[in-house]
Image (cartoon, rainbow, N blue to C red; front, side, top):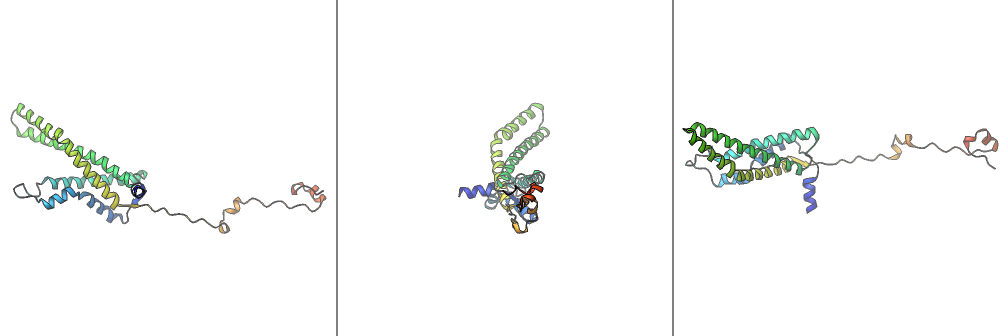
Length: 215
């Protein structure tokens, strides 16, 4: 069992053909993170909460779809450049790394957006400074662990789905060994035939390269 899992994630992989079909399928499967999809289906947004367009789960799906498409583009370019990541584990690690970076960047942008809204929506310097401080503490400090937890979990799911759906194990094609009877290069490496044994001592004396003279 352990060997099968290691072979699944550490064996070399290539894009599953046709790429135009399995590439988008992997992106769709990676975007549909179960915690968000299931909660949207079971706990549908209501009009009192602002409807579907104002639901944070839909915004998270849209942000995840954009981030996954960007990571796929990065992985594709990296594979075309130097051939890595060449395994499912490498693809998963790329999604984990860039998912962490994108989650942190999204949180920073959210904090900056709320801070700008606070500056234009408040009156007076001291009240504005107090609201900015509250915003930074609420979203930048208290919101950092849950944001990173959600982002990393989403990235692990996305990397797993892309590596399984969009990639397939690489088939090593063995080259047939040519038969020595039909190997054209064998004549270049074949040693020359041995010199014939001289028939008489006179012949051996005249041509010593043919061998030693007979007694």
